[in-house]
Image 1 (cartoon, rainbow, N blue to C red):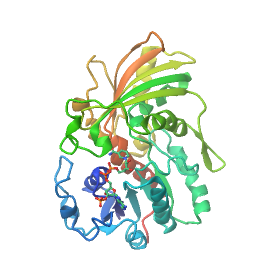
Image 2: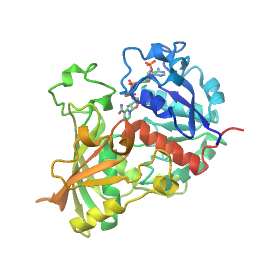
Image 3: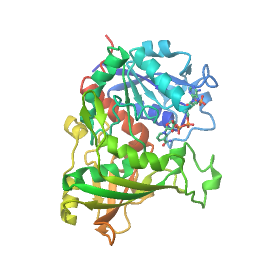
Length: 362
Ligand SMILES: NC(=O)c1ccc[n+]([C@@H]2O[C@H](COP(=O)([O-])OP(=O)(O)OC[C@H]3O[C@@H](n4cnc5c(N)ncnc54)[C@H](OP(=O)(O)O)[C@@H]3O)[C@@H](O)[C@H]2O)c1
């Protein structure tokens, strides 16, 4: 099979390093270009990430000697070298919007980890198992941009990927309201304990902008396609508190939920066990075989034990029990830089390729 040539912009950062690592040995994708800020452009990748390589595995050999390009100054060049790019740049929102649109207009599809375009109505925000049908809006987006190949697709915020997957198969019971507290790992801020020693033995009850994203993004993910845009789901009402905790990787959510048609706990567990999405149907390379795992043990899921389940792409659920204010409460966990960031974007790119939205250039 001919491999898709892939570029990573923001390839030196925490999420970018994950993208570079996930391209190693990928059956469909081949790393062809890495770009970052002008500070890194012109350096060998290995030199540019020296002292800040944050992955557990070594820098992939195929990346070490690649000479970094400038994500902003080399748009046309990068667009001509690759079949699509992953975007993981950390810049101002308007700058990211303009940069990603520039790649799309150069006929280079963009699969983005960034939040900048999440609320652009014709940009799909996709959790591949939950709302794969949203990629249909790409046709309308291409018309707006005047492109043939180019478009932007994004993944949702990492925090919601710890509880939206667990809630999605329960929507058949009519979810009325949700309360969620998230306990978020330091890698979500692009940090390690070395670069953020203040987080050792600490908890910070504030993550800028995160609570708004956690309350609003599920409504777009659960929305519907109408006339070339995504229209948000109306209920349920969601309220969220997001805390930063001293965990390297893995966002945990404590969720409370009430229903219009209250299911039994067995029905909920069955809904989780049976839940399969388009990635499983298509047997995509990065798809977990079983997306949602329910643990009966009372002290699971745990970040350290369970975040790497199925390559960090599965979501772990536990502690389902009745609540005194809501119908039920439970705990769920997902790996924030894998399922919640680069891994989720790789799975989205695989979906876009399998469904014919990204094709290798002739
Ligand atoms: N970490 C997570 O779990 C997570 C999850 C979801 C979303 N995100 C989002 O993903 C993005 C990247 O996050 P991160 O944690 O990987 O950040 P990071 O570690 O700070 O990396 C930022 C990347 O952006 C590049 N960059 C900065 N300024 C640039 C410029 N002017 N032009 C081109 N490239 C520039 C950096 O290049 P240099 O090395 O050359 O400076 C680096 O490659 C952010 O928007 C973040 O909000 C992160």
